[in-house]
Each structure stands twice: as C-alpha cells, then as structure tokens.
Length: 240
Ligand SMILES: Cc1cc2nc3c(=O)[nH]c(=O)nc-3n(C[C@H](O)[C@H](O)[C@H](O)COP(=O)(O)O)c2cc1C
Image (tube, rainbow, N blue to C red; front, top):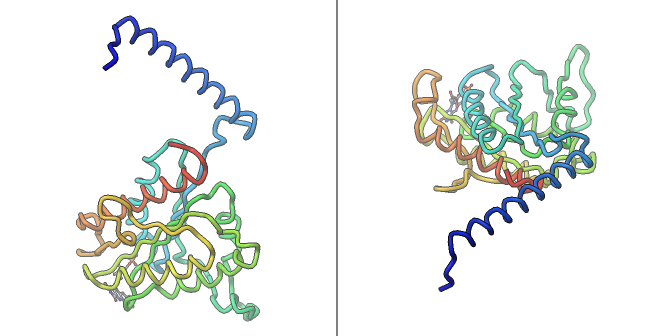
C-alpha cells in the first residue's frame, strides 16, 4: 500500500482545491457566457392540480411534492397551477368550436407549460370512481395542442399523484391512466423512486380533507417530487 505523508497529503489537497476552484470559476464564466447570468442553469417544475375543488387535498399534496423537489437543488424553482375554477372545455380538443357564451382558459396554460425552462411536470388528480377527474381528462385532451405543435412536451419529466378517500381507492389505476396519456406526449415518466420505487404518489384523504395525517402518502409525495427533480436536473445536465 502506498504510504502518504501528511505533507504530501496537504500538498495534493491544496493542488486539488485550486483545480476545483479554477474549474468552478470556468463553469460560472461559461454559464454567464451562455445564459447571460449565473442563474442560467435554473429549471422549473410545475405541479398541476386537477381537482375541481380549489386548495383541497390534491393541491395540498402537490405542495408537499413541489417542496421536496425544490429541496433537491437551489437551481430548481416550482409553481403550482390549480385548474379549479378554470374553464377547460374538452370538446375543443376534437376541433369543435367554442359554443356561444362558452369560455376557455386553456390558452393561459400553453406558454407556462411549453416554457423551455420547464423540465418537469407533476399532475395531481383526485380519484373519481377509480380514475382521474373529468377536469383532468379534459386538460390532458387539450394537451393535444402541444402534441400537434411538434410535441412540445417531449422529453419533459412527468410524475403523477392521486388522492382518494380510501387507502386503496384506485390511486394506482388512476396514476396509470394519466401516465398513459402523458406517454403519448413523449414525456419521460418517473415514479417515486427509492426506497420503494413505486408508480407515483398515492395519497389517502383519511380525515376531513387533511392529508398530512397520511404518513405513507406524504412520503410517496415527497419522493415523487425528489425523483422528478433529480431526473429533470440530469436532463438539464446540472448535477445539483
Ligand atoms: C364523484 C367522486 C368519486 C369519487 N371516487 C372515489 C374513488 O373511487 N376512490 C376513492 O378513494 N375516493 C373517491 N372519491 C373521493 C375523492 O377522491 C377524495 O375526496 C379526494 O381527496 C378529493 O380531492 P380534492 O380534495 O383535491 O378535491 C370520490 C369523490 C367524488 C366526488
């Protein structure tokens, strides 16, 4: 075994430190050159709550998810979008015109989601009869806009979260159903990663619209947020 004296160790460490400092400075200079600012590596992860009820259990679970995503790196910013109250007529996906007096808010979402800074999207939906809500389906159908526009969601990372009033109320089936639609958009689907590495976040609204008591579900939500963030950073080429 090679014997390293303390002096050798100190000398090599100082040299290594200087090399790292030089590399860091070079990397920062490159960032400024490419992006015009030291924040050029920033990426965004967007959560979309597809509950017709504003600020209820799906939104609360997504907040937990996004918070965990943000903790992965200072290079990550997050935004929660709630579809509650928005008018998203699904029939427009089939090319039908707006009916007289009908409103459509989907256009507001288009620039937000096609933003190249958005590297990850987390869809959250309540479980309605073992599947996604009608609002979620209408939203996913309207995402045909991105599909037609040169697959604008392609290669963005996607995670799915479902909340039900029963522990096994169809969360996994619901998640799969949403994932199938996202795969049509060529998105990169991830689950909740280690340690269990399951399909996504499965949350139980076990007591009066308070999901924080569902320790298991909260863990899946945190892990999903972390996993989406990790893969998004990799795609961006940022280590953390
Ligand atoms: C029409 C309808 C169907 C539902 N079906 C299910 C179901 O199949 N399984 C389940 O666990 N919960 C079911 N629920 C309960 C909701 O998933 C649950 O209350 C959820 O927390 C609501 O999300 P929100 O608080 O974000 O609105 C249903 C609720 C409604 C209104």
